[in-house]
Figure: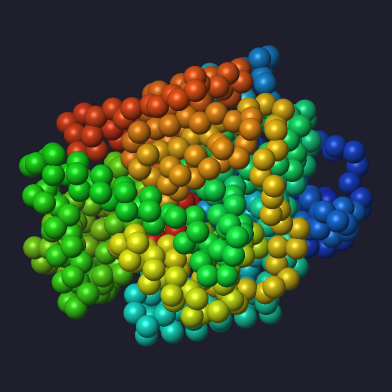
Length: 550
């Protein structure tokens, strides 16, 4: 198998060749000739059976013949071309996740019947990764240097540090972000998806969108309702809560509070405690796990632990903030819950920094939090999208008050989700010129399949319910299990069978279908035995990711 560095180089080479022939620069949009009617995509082989390409797209769809940007693509061709339905596009979430990387990671492992009938296509949304990226610094080190030394603020002093960091990042993007900064809304990305549909030769779109990708899917469904063939949204965000909130919400509650991710995380942690205690000796943190966790959290507020990374030898402190961030990250994947239990037990017993470091490294590996490219634009890419899409309080004091309320209402995870995308407070106001603010109620040409987990720590079940209510041509499929998103990622046969049938023949599950988990994350028959970590690499928030790093 080709390693990540090799295939990334080949994708970059394919991108450079395509851009050279179209007169577009990946990092700096330039004026291009008017595109011909539905030109074919120029694919180049890029290892392991994949093909890579870039497609030009208007920077501003109000000026379709003006400045063009590059959208990076990868595909794995259908294994049965004679019975090929078309292309199946994937978005792994974020915002800021790379669809190119996701397709590379999962395409070969999708169900054989799906692989046979579809070209599996991943794309990097505008502003992200291998597409024309938003980059506000010269190096990744400079980007990371503006971040505060904690995953989220937990005290007034830390909140002041967060404010300084946010203002520095926003100012850097105002100075150096370039034209792409103002054209990164989900609506523009959905317009890119329709352009890709056309260039790929499909009359209608087939799409699977996870997490933030559910918002991208809902934008597409409402902007292009007559062009939907099959649209799956899994791990769903309520689009009203995301964009504006209800009434005057946006004046007092940031987007991270409005989408109620903290509620989903709180409920999922409750399941961790319940299942851990039920497992007894099968869970290292059993024995009134909720009480033990509360005691550990209280101790770490005043007395942080020390951790030594087993690979670098670097030593760092492990604070209360880190505990919450690491817990949230582990809750994304039920397969990691036994490792989280071991880690919590070891921290509580105050084992050596080396032992704690090894435990943390094990979780990091199982979550797929591997090293990334030389300059991943995770620092500016995610807010580039979120701040383009969403309304937020203009007053810093309003963010502080919202954090206090969120902690009172949701407990441990109220603050970390409240402060997600806090840079939006000072983000350049010119961003998101062509965003979609609703309505979100279009009747699509084919039913939309909405998939929701009962216990999802990032996109609570309420988001799936809200989207299903809004879309008149939709059907809700429920997974009564744990972790972030369900289709293919969770390894649940019931979910996968229902989604695959829908993708292949358009048949939605019976109304009220609830798929039950198989066993428990703590075994012996584990509900997470087949779960893939492919999504975790891009879906885990950047603040959470940093707490797993040395």
